[in-house]
Length: 72
Image (tube, rainbow, N blue to C red; front, side, top):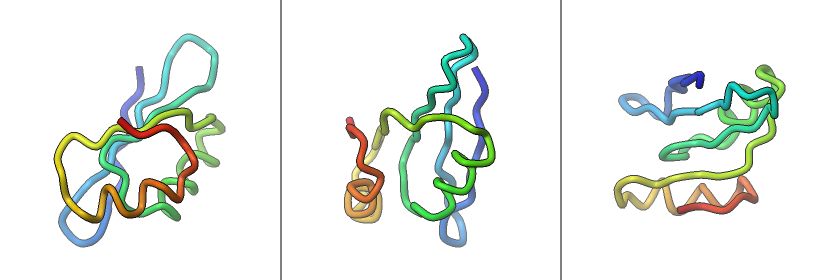
């Protein structure tokens, strides 16, 4: 598994978790900055299939819908 911290806003991080079984699939934890997430997903050449919000902040739940993935 590969975990990539992606800066969000001025003092937060969102985390891209990439599988290591060759399927090129990934999940995002605490999505905030959709454009930055998409840049890293493209750079890593992976398919974003899921997201996880591990605490409730409006910014995570508001922007996560723009990723068009299941969010838990």
